[in-house]
Length: 241
Image (cartoon, rainbow, N blue to C red):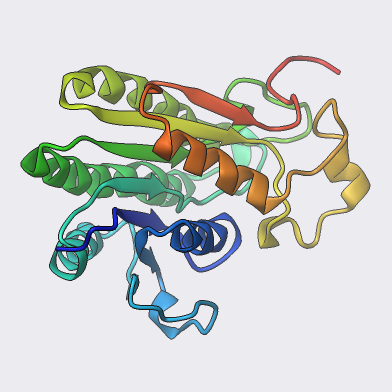
């Protein structure tokens, strides 16, 4: 069994997920990263402490394969970062029920599959653990013109279950937190004007990926924080600006 702790990162092939993989490896963690086609990527140095598994997080079998591989390769699951997510905007009346199913399958069902496997393993180990989920500041503070109603059903639900699970597993020392970004400098926004992106927070800035990564690592390693929704959003959750 490895002396290093092991973290699972979903949506690990680009943006925040790729940043999490690299930072956790730099900090000495074993990392199991998953996304649809991650086993084909050349993005990471295939060090001995990194396992990459391709799969759709919406498929329950993916979570099972990832959890099994983590324990087989490294002996433990000590942390999970539910980073994989789907986000797209439409006027409410133009969203379809198929859109909702797509959002729910990845954002909610994926969370459920991976979190169940992680918690079960953490309970077997009897050594606590950490779960951090990426949500969105739009759940707290909708922005006029950013019509994200259906994605926010799913992201708001993740904030709610974070608090419920934090209480349910507090006595097992399994901490459950969320990190709530605003606009992050990821490939998702590659085609958006910077002036527009800057207008979406009172500080007028776009968050670097590493700022989100650092927030996740902080929550993962902070032994006294649970049930927290940490906003790393340049003040976007505060109100009108």
